[in-house]
Length: 196
Image (cartoon, rainbow, N blue to C red; front, side):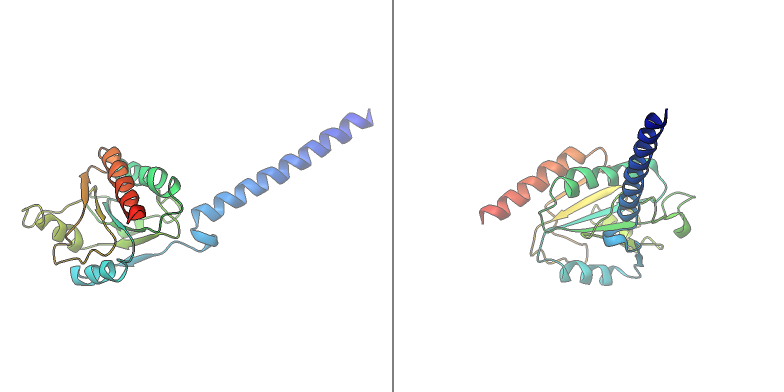
């Protein structure tokens, strides 16, 4: 009778070790690279964001303008994680996730670092509380005062941004709805870069 009990105890011990390892990996993944907490930087002006983009233009860049609470935005960001970042870990890419208040519930405290659907060492998060960046991108579409959101902008390496954050090589809205376009355009961009 003792032998089955010992075997069961060994099995339980192995399962506990596997579960502990699994939850350790989840915690690291949720808290950013190497377990560092995810931070969000405040954006105060479109000029500062242009400077950020221009300072990181040695590689392709992807800008996402997203609501922190709208499920379609969150799912779009999740898809960018899977079809771009997870599928192409070797590509030097800067992703700028710009979170902005578009819905009544979209307040800074609603941005939850533990639930953010896109993350990793290539992703930087920004809070555009006054919709400065969203409005600036909105002007690119002849929508004075309009706010661009749930949209992506893809830039080639070396792109120098003007005041309207142009020239981008691809854009699409909604991020979820345009995910196939983003994937196709991104892969074409990186394949062109490999051939240069």
